[in-house]
Image 1 (cartoon, one colour):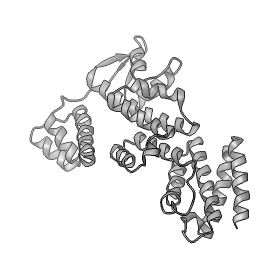
Image 2 (cartoon, helix red, strand yellow):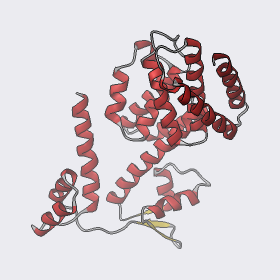
Image 3 (tube, one colour):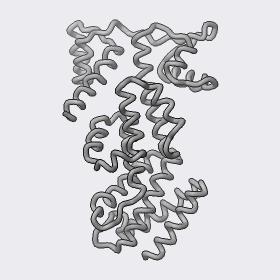
Length: 286
C-alpha cells in the first residue's frame, strides 16, 4: 500500500507542478476515496508512518490545488482533513515543510470571512517559530493594516503574494473590504462620481464594468450623463431601532419597535450591528 501511495504522490506532484489543475483535482478525488476506504484519510495513529506521510502529502497538494482552482468548498474540506495529521500525529510524523503555508492560508481564510476572534485564537496557539515564518507573517500584516484602516496596503499586497494560493483568498478579502467601504459610502453621501467611487473601492482603470456590476448589485443607480452614482434612499435612521435590530433582527421585534413609533433606518442598523458584533468578538478575545 505504501509503495502505491508513494507512486500516487509522485504522479500528483508532477501534475501539480505542471499546472494541470483539473487533472490534479480528478486524481486527488480518486485518491481521497482510496484513502477513505483504507482508513488513512482519518489519520489513524497505528497506521504505517510511510503511508501516513503519503496520505498527508496527497491532502496537502489537493488543498493547494483547490485554491488554485478557486474552489473554496474543496479547500475547506481538504484543509479540515489535514488537521489530524498535523495535530494528532505530531509525535509520530516529521514536521511538514508545507505546514507554515497551510497555517498562513487558514489565517487568511479567517480574515476573508470576518472571523477575527478565531484568527487571534489561532495566532495565540502557534509556536514562536511559526509566527516568524514569512507565510504566517503575511496574513498577520494584512490584519494589522485592516485594523489601521490602511486598506490601500491590503490592496497593494497582491503584488507580493508569497504563493499563488494566497491571491485567491486575498481577492475574497478585498471583496469583504469593498463591501465595508461601500456601506460607509452609502451612509455618508447622497451621490458620488464614478471616478471617486472607483478610487475609494480600489477598482483600477479598465475595471469600470466590474465597478458598475458591483454597484448594481448594491442597488446603486448610475446617471450616464454625469457618470454619478446615487444610492437607495432610506428613512431617517433611529439608533434605538438599530440597537434592537442588532440584538434581535426578527420580524416580530422589528414590528414591535415600529409600533412604538421607532422609525426604521437601514443605514444605522448596518452600522451598529457590525460594531456590536466586533465588540463582542473583542470581548471574547480579552
